[in-house]
Amino acid sequence: MQTKQKIIWAFLICGVHTCMGQLAEPEIIASSGGNYSNTNGSLSWTCGEPITATESSGSYFLTQGFQQPSAIIVTAISNPVPKSSIGVYPNPVTSSIYIHRDGNEQLQIQLINMNGKVILTRTLSPSESQLDLSLYANGIYLLKLSSMENQLLQSLKIEKVN
Image (tube, rainbow, N blue to C red):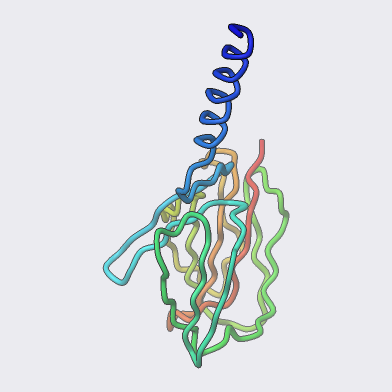
């Protein structure tokens, strides 16, 4: 009789522990992520987070993911990104990147690290085609190229290596 009671207690303890094994909280383990905010809004992201649902109505989109605490409504971009013939090479880069473009237009350049911090803002004149990155740490950067009217022309992922 003692053995049966011990077995029953063992099953009860394991059963209660198993029932408490899952949490009802949104949680994700990701390799990278960050937060960015300014006066216009905020952005919180994780690398590799799956999207569970996307709904749209007119010019509004609703996207839900594991990291988001509630529904977030984001307005769509009304002006599509224009086609541009801008080439950036080499990638990955060791010291300098070269920007090739058609036309004689100035470019606004922003270099953004993976934490969302703008680490370089510069205007590139029509005669310039080189951007020195030798002083920056190895890693992945976002290079945003915009017109002088702040219209996004191209956004590129740049890898800086030794």
